[in-house]
Amino acid sequence: MITDQIFDYFFKPYEGYYVFDIFLEFIAVFLGILSVIFAKMNKIAVYPTGLISTGIFVYLLFHFKLLGDMIINAYFFFMSIYGWFYWSYKREGQIINKVSYSSNKDYVVVALIFLISLILISIIYKLFNVFNSWSAYIDTLTTGIFFVAMWLMARRKVESWIFWIIGDIISIPLYLYKGLAITTIQYFIFTIIAVMGYKSWVKIYKERIPV
Image (cartoon, rainbow, N blue to C red; front, side, top):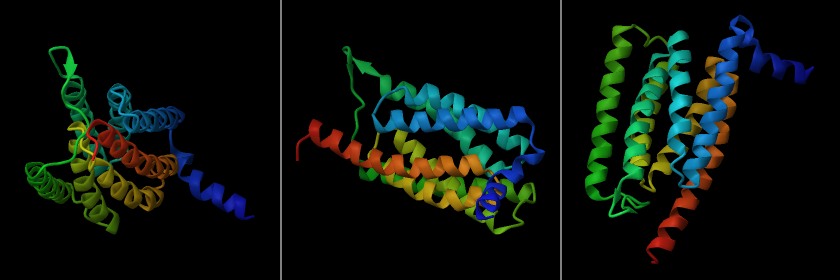
């Protein structure tokens, strides 16, 4: 039956996994989705939930030797600490780093982050000899996109959502190919929330600074 084939396609790859690892993936996905929802709402709770989720994914992805994805999540982990500080920074009792659009200087930093991340991931993949399938090259691209998205998110920039949307859309078939069905569903949900997040932050900015 078609339903059986779909079930096997999504969940057969998990047959060789430990129950504990599957449980951890569920927790990481749940907290990851919750973190993105908090980001859409412009709530600082995006960072504690994100820290736990990315920390779990670092362990899982290292375990399954998905180095590019592991590096992305390790980067997310440390950028979450930075973003937590940046979002909560106050001057005279007032939050000063609010939702805004990127400046020309920000775009220069974006270009540098993207370029450096591509170079670093390519070097790491070469060292570990994992440039052995098309997914490795897509991995490298999504790493650059997500590195940029996370930096812009930590800086509370509206454009961060555009990069999240692009990276999430690419990641859906990528994770499906890798056999991580739960994570595939997560990125599908991420895409929907990212679109909503972009609209929400544009509205927040316009309410703060009418145009």
